[in-house]
Structure formats: structure tokens, C-alpha cells
Length: 498
Image (tube, rainbow, N blue to C red):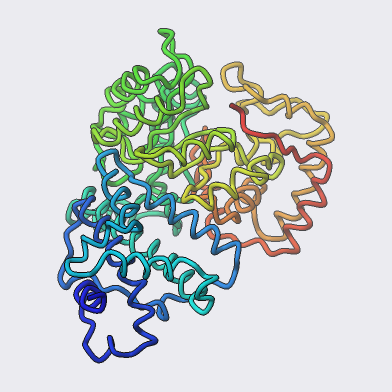
């Protein structure tokens, strides 16, 4: 009876293979893989393209020898198998039921007790130690198969319009540099390694005609990623971007905005009402139907996390945002959000990160890397400190942020004489590599694989061109060690700002 059930479930398994005892052990476990994948496929309504899904034998999956990597893989599998939407709870329940005796009724003629016994033998390494490695491979295989199905479903839901790639290449064909792109976490977004920010510049700190020229130049050099927030210049930054982006194909750029901080009318926080109100207000100002990335600017300690994540998930399911991110969240709250069932998951983190501000390295970057989250770094030049333009014992140069009353927030470091002296010692290192100080600092940030993009806030067109010159630069270990030695004692390892 059990042989009959095993023979009917996995596709394209011949009678001769079933007779082999070694393959028989694998098949007993592959039944679980096949049924699990089928549950996920049905719950997510993912049609099979072409031939039916082929279950890969355990020997073809490739074992992971690194125990840490294996544990991370199992944690990722656990996350993937949690229902990603509220209506998919049934799949998980059926998987749990299948490990009970009555689950045998699902296998047609297979007796429940025999199926239960097979499950027990497959899951108890002590009883059958020779199947230990096979079991580990199968667990990893389940995760890969489910990941593949979920990605397929997501891609079908967000199918790009025909010719999108061709239009993108045409738009950037006159680029003066070869921009590189990185995948943003577990999303389907490919973002340029340099992101154009709008904090303190557009809609306030820089005249609109000059700011429009900066945006145009950013597109010319290959930047496709633009970051803003509802609070920047009290909403005027979003309004400005809505105007200058109106004439560009919506699928030619990736647009991100944020919410949390107090708006001029007093709105603030991440409550359900605020999430829905602020996304609608941002879309109106940006003149678009959706944003590619919607980010929580900080953690809201006055609102239950469940309320925030449910509201953000509703925004995604309504088509107003494609993906979710956060900025400066504490690691424990990141973990809590990832563990919540039935909600959309984060794909990005936006921390402050630079040569002299390395707090994310302690917990946020490792945690993110293990959970399909990429970093979008703000202040990679430490608000201009790492460009070397602020010299010890001298007043800040004209038109710099430190000299502007509107744009000199968080510029206390410009008065730190020891830090400024150490930064000047970075200049020979940059020159030896044919780089400017800004390019050296950006290349250092981009050396981190978990960083998808570094946000720049240019006030002049030449700054954009200079910053993009950091793309593709590789710093060797000796150079990285030299930078650490020069800055030793001045590097800050602060935690999240929330």
C-alpha cells in the first residue's frame, strides 16, 4: 500500500527505481517534499509552466558542510514556509496534520499507520542515523523548491511590461559611466549602487531649477534609484520629485519614500490610520500610483508592532507599494517583525553607515544578510566630512552644508579637530588609487556585499559625477587595513537611532 502511494505521488518515477532499496529510503522522504511543495503552489495559486514539477532526489541537492550556513538556511526555510499572506494559513495547517496518523487518509489507499511510521523513521536520526545527511539535504531542498515557487508567483503578480529592459537601456544609453546594479534584498528590484537622496536638498535647501538639473544628471550617469520621505522639507521634496519625474516612464526608475516623523500638520507615527493616510498623501505629492519601496523612517514605540506590520501589508496588497523597508530599527524589533505570521516581510534597511560610523556592522548587517534584507546606506560621506573639504583649523567652505543654516543638521563632527586631521591623512591613500576622497569613502561602503546602494545628496552636478566614479572600485585587504589604522580611535559604533 505504501509503495503504491509513493509510486503515485512523485512524478516520473519508474517501477524499476521503486524496487531499489536505496532509492526507496529517499522516496519515503521525498513524498513529504512533494506534498509540501504542492501545498504551497496551490495556496499561492501558482500555475505550473510546461511540464509538471520535478522533485529533485536528495543526492542532487548538494549538502552544506558549514553548520552555521545550514542553520541559517533552515531559519530561512522556516520563514518562507510561514504563510506570507493571511489567506495561506491552510497550507501550514495541512503540513502539520500530515505528520499525524490521520494524515494517511490523504494518500488514498495507504494505511495511516504505515505512513505515520515512515514519517517517524524519516525524522528520527537516532533510529536511522544513516539518513542524517539525507534529511539535512531534504530540508534545504524543501526551502529551495518553495523559494522558487514563491518567486515565480511574485513575478507573475508583478509582471513587467514588455520592453521594460529595452526602454531602460535606451534611457541610460548616453551614460558617461558603467553603472552597476544590485538586487535589493529578496525583492525583484535591481537598484543602482548609487542612490540619489533628497534630504535637505530638493524642495528646500537647493533652488528648484538647480535641483532639477541634478536629477537629470543622475539619470544620465545611470542612477535609477531615488530616495525621499514625506517629512523632507515638509512634503515639498516629494512634490518636487513628482514634478520632475512626471515625464519619465514609471518603470525606468525605482522610487522609495518613508513615513514616521512629525509632519507640519501634526501627523506622526506608524499607526494603521497614519500608514494609510501617509501613503495616500505621498502618492499624491509624487504623482504616481505606487512607490517601489515604502520605509518606516524610525520605530514607533507608541504603536503595537502587529498594527504597523498589518497596515503596511495592506498597503502592499492594495498595490500602493511593492516592497517594504525600515530605517534605524533596533535589532530585536527587526526580529519580531520578521517572526510575525501573515504579513509582508522587509527587504531593506536604511542605516547610517560610513568609514567613521560603523554601528550596523555589529548586529543589523549580519541579521539582515541572514533574512533577505539589503542595506540602503545614508550619509556614506558623513555629511561631507569624508570628502576632506572640512579642514582642521579652518572655517567651512562657502556653500557647504556646514555653512548653511538650512542644511547643517548633525554637523557637529565638522568641529572635531582630531577627526578632521585623521580624515586628511586619508588623502594620500585615495590619490594612490586614483580616487577622490569621496570616491574612496563610497568604495569602502560598497565593499560590503549586504549594501545594495549608497545614498548621496548632491548639491552640484559635478558631485554626482564624482560619486558615481566609486562604482566598481575594489579596495584590497591591505588598503582596508590601512584605512582602519588611520581612523583608529575615531570610529563610532552607535546602535540604531530608534
